[in-house]
Length: 170
Image (cartoon, rainbow, N blue to C red; front, side, top):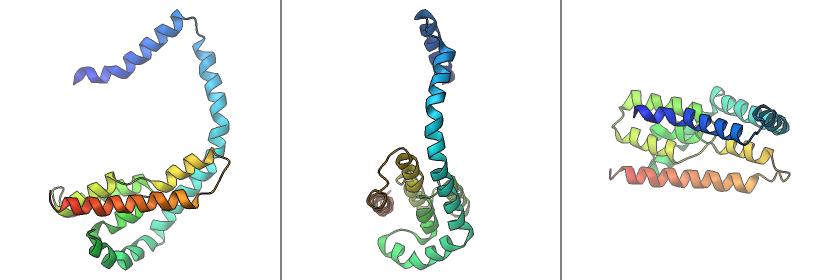
């Protein structure tokens, strides 16, 4: 296990030696790559800032808590524990926020409980849809986001329902 931490530094060293052998100007190539990345970064920033602000507003406004309590009967009917409803709703918006919720669930219910297993499955089987959409669609000219986001959200929800169903047997 000690040797695994050496893989990345050794990879950089091998690439550096190879570039020297091939007489590649490393610094010039590096700065050229950064120069090409700056326009992408500038076009990406407004979308990422908007998604981060919306996820914070969703949580801070209390909308997440109200929506969770409103959807609790539906979640219960579909086999999703209502205790992880907030995680199911927050995960498409914020990865770090859902990580914090997952930690709270572990603290409250124990890491080996049914609720914690369902929370792990909900966390692992879903994606931060809005963040990924912001990153992906910032670089495209076509900005028709409705269908891809709806499909991704539906897929995430189906994965959570199926995962919670399977957790009953584990």
